[in-house]
Image (cartoon, rainbow, N blue to C red; front, top):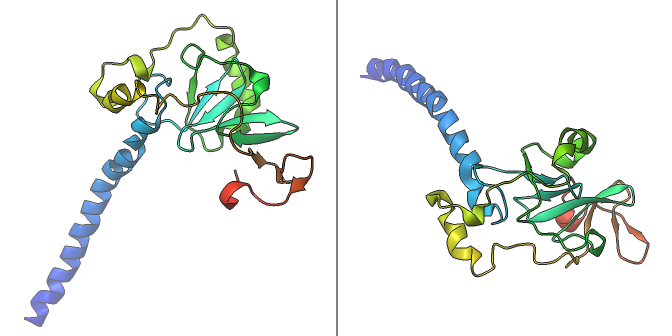
Length: 187
C-alpha cells in the first residue's frame, strides 16, 4: 500500500501543477478586468481596465484606481483629488482622454505630449461611460444620476496634494515635508 501512495504522489503533483499553469492566464485576465466600475462616468467606453487617462488638452493625468489627478507643478508631479484653479473649469465629458495602462504613466509625459498632440484642441469624439447602453456599465448608469461617479466635482484641491519629488510634499506654506506623501506611498 505504501508503494501505491508513492506512485500516486508524483502523478497528483504533476496534475495539480499542469492545472495551475492552465488556469493562471484566466485568473490574471479576471484580475485585470475588474476596474470597470472604478472608471468615472466621464471615461471613454470600450475599456475593461484603465490605469490612467491622459488629458492632452490640459497635459494632466487621472489615476483611475486612486481617483486622483496627476499634474506637474513646481518641477514635480503632484497628486490631488481635483486640479488647481489655474486649470479653470473643465468639462470632463467633452475633453479627449487617452487610456494609458503603464505604471506611473506620467513618467512618459514627454512622449505622450508629442504622441497625442493632435487631440489637444478638440474635434475628436468619444463615447462616454455615462451614455453607454452596455450592461457592463450598468452600475454607472444607475449611479451617474446621483452624482456619486461624476467625480471630480470641481477644480479646487480638497486636500493637500501628494508630491512625487525627492523633496517630499509641500505643506502649503512654502516649507517642504520629508516623506513619500499620504500613507507613505511613493510614485
